[in-house]
Length: 49
Image (cartoon, rainbow, N blue to C red; front, side, top):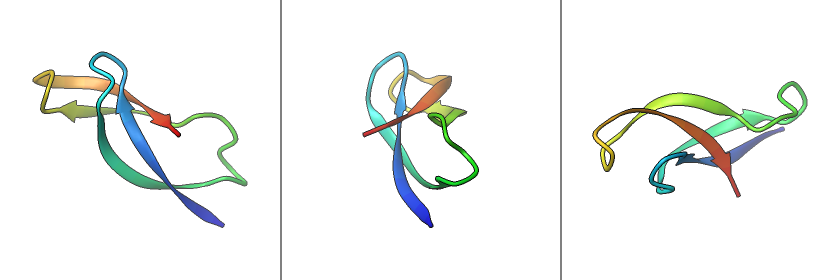
C-alpha cells in the first residue's frame, strides 16, 4: 500500500530525498521542510512525479 516518492525542492527544483507515502491516508501531495544542500538552508520540499 505504501509507494515510494521523490521530494523536490520548491526553490531550486532539484530532487533531493526519497520517502514512502500511504496513498490511502494521504491523498494530496506531501510537503515537508527539509534541508537542501544546493540552496544551503531548510526549504519546503514537495512530492514530485
